[in-house]
Amino acid sequence: MKAILVDDEQMAVDFLEHLLKKNSDIDVIDKLTNPLMVRKKVQQLHPDVVFLDIEMPQVDGLELAEQLLSSHPFLQIVFVTAYNQHAVRAFEINALDYLLKPFSIQRLNKTVERLLAKVNGESKSMSSNNSLNNTLQINVCGSLSLTTSHGEKEVISWRTLKAKELFLYLLHNKEKLVQKSFLIELLWPDLDPEKAYAQLYTAVYHVRNVLKKYPSNFKIINTKEGYTLSTQNITIDIQLWKEKLELAPPMTINSIDRYVEIMDLYKGSYLEEHGYWWAENHQLQLEQVWLDYALKIAYFYWKEQSYQEAKKWFKKVCDSHPENEEAHFILLKIYATTNDSINVERHYQNLKEFLHTEFGTKPHTDIRNWYSQWKKYN
Image (cartoon, rainbow, N blue to C red; front, side, top):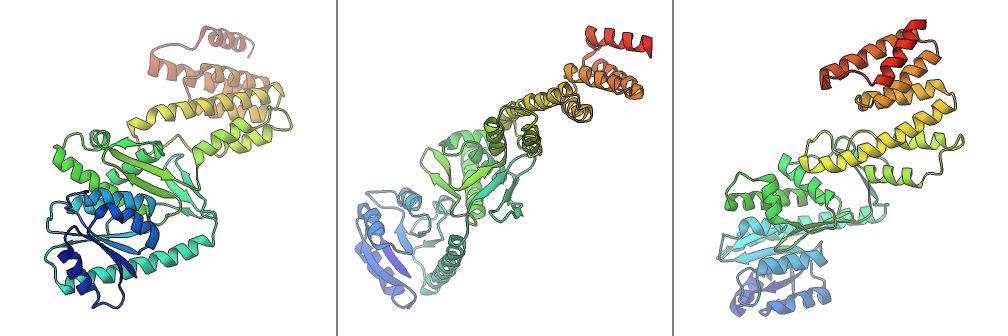
């Protein structure tokens, strides 16, 4: 395993090299006391691990690690420092280990063991993944799940509900920088800043651990200001559904089955099981798209006198949007046209009761007049 050592003190890198040479699994390929050279050397030498000091006069080791991991996501970082106050942020950056000076050879050997397990495990995972199509579908209709390229559905196990919401908010804003201060206000508004930031760093650490399983699909980019979730080879079910509707041909007798097939992909509102306030606007927009197309399909069948199909779609609209009197009115007419007097009476009374209970109103005048005429002859 190839290693680069970085510390602004020559004695420190020499001593670390001396200890590492006692372990045959580590090959020290470079020692640097100028941290400004690190990015160039990593690019040239492709190490497996960088042992990195945090407190250096020319650059902050934590910031340098974030830059390295942004361009080399499979690089391992081990922080070596005399200060322990950076530990939380170090692990949030996804460092493999944190060595507090002075450390023993036994403690260093434990770090090397972790490195070997990590690098070997990721090599096997990469080898396996490279032979597959790594496209991943994220399902956000209803609740969160993933579907692999083999069609296998996976439900992610989250350490905490906050980590789950953090991931979903970053996904909601994928490829955009989300300010850390905003995330604090969103997720921990009642905590004092120090505790809130500690909670944020811990949550990001948990999210990174979950996403390690999908290295070719997700990367969290960390800056001083905030985080960006970068995605690759992914589709999102709700976006795919909307795009298919937009690209569908004009609705005709030949294409109506295609519309029904696409609409069946809508398994529930956007993140409806989670109740996030920040998702509500997007949720309402997508529900309106569903409603518009459901009504188009329902009216198409009605005009084609395909009453069974029309009835099914108008009932779907009435069930999901019971305030839509237009759909109720047409459904009443379909029941009447098909001589289903029982359902005309039942549906009208149910509508009347719903509007009175929920809004303190009566059915629209046109509906009441129509019902009176129907009642007169039935």
